[in-house]
Each structure stands twice: as structure tokens, then as C-alpha cells.
Image (tube, rainbow, N blue to C red; front, side, top):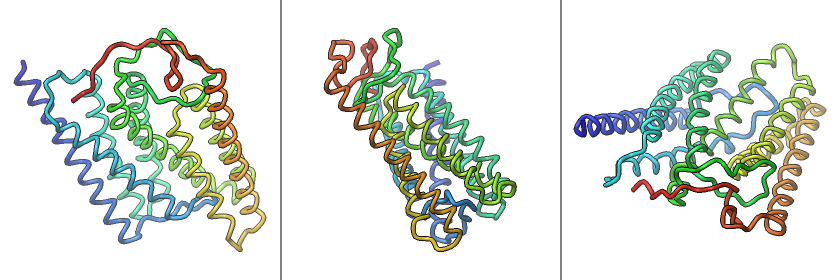
Length: 291
């Protein structure tokens, strides 16, 4: 049984490594060739904004390297499932890149939707087991929920990269969804206002309920890119001005909410053993790092 488990673990890591390497290779190839079309929407940020993928690949690469490090402890069952989701996600990621690079921008929304669902499952799993680093007050807390992993090391090398990955895939899903409606809306300002409004509200909801700072940071990165892309364009001035104004308003909302919640937590937040200054309210199970 131990030999079977060992071979299964090695097989999962090997599959993760192969799919990750293939995805990274195709990303670099397409980036150098500039053959992936831009999203045909006024929400499309500058190409430099999409360079966040470099950070995502680097951080997930660190997660992969750490997965190969020898350990004397048995890997928790949820980590095996996380490895499988990681492998499937990068297989879909390759398909998404190739379909979009082939010029099938609308059809590319299908693999992107699948990628978003798989990465969402991975994010939910990580979020359920690994305690976040919380610097803001929360609207909702749970003292009943027990995090099986409170390691700061695992937070940095597992929860953070998967949160970063999910947050940016969600942003690209918004772009793809708006692009699908472009043929019907024909650059209607209402479409962009609705998209930015919903995106901002959802991002704020995650900050209020989970305190996941990474999601807020990615949202700010995305919104700043949208504003920058529309601020200096000469065509369709009215629509672009409205989009730039809406993105600026969303940025101010995020920054104001972050500052307000951080100040509230520092001033009035719980400081009990169950909820010290920088931890989510809730009980914690003793757990050692994965290495």
C-alpha cells in the first residue's frame, strides 16, 4: 500500500511538472510572437497588465518545486486532490491559449470558463484548509470553522499563489464575458458600467467576508490597467471617458474600503487568543508545515 501511495504521489507530481512546463513554454512562445489577440472591449488593459502571468507562473513554479521536496510526513488527502486540479487546470490552460492564439476568440471563452471552474475548486479547497493572513475587519466570521493548516510557510507557498491565480483568471473571465456581449451591445456604456460594478462589488464582498488581501490587490491591478488603457485614447472618447471614470471610482472604493477595514481592525478588532490582530476569527487545529 505504501509503495502504491508513493508511486501515485510521484505520478501526480510528474504530471503536474509536465503540464506546467508545457503551459509555460506555450506562454513564452505566444508572448514573444505577440499572436494572442487582445480582448475586443474597452475594458482590455495594456499588455503590461497581463504580465501578471509572469508572477503567477513564478509563484506556482515555487509551489511545484516545493511539492517535490522530500518530507517525512504523510501528505494530507486534500493535497493530492489539489495536485490533480493543478494538472487539469494547466491542461485546460494550454487549450485556452492555443484556441485564442488561433484567432477563435469567442470559442476560447469555453476553455476559459472550464479553467475558471477548476481553479475556483482549487482556491475553495485551499481556502477551506489554510488560514489566511487577515489585516482587515471582517463582516462575517466563524468560530466553528477549524483550519487544518495554520502554517505561515504553507500560506506563502500554497494559498497565496492559488489565490493570485484564481483572482486573475476571474479578471480574464470578465473580459471574455464582456467581449461576448460586444456584438449585441455595440460599445454601450451600460455594459461596461455593469461589468465594472459587478466586478467591484464581488471583489469587495471577498474582502469583507474572507479578508483575502490578494484578491483586492489583483482587483486594483486590473482596474488601474483599465483606467490607463482608456485615459489616453482618442477614439470613442465619450465611452472611454466613462470607463476611465468608472475604473477610477472603483479604485477609490477599494482603497477606501481597505484603509477603513484595516484601521478598524487595528483600533477595534478582536485581540483574543482565538482572534489575534492579524488572524481570522476562529479556532485553529495544531498542524505542522508540509515539509
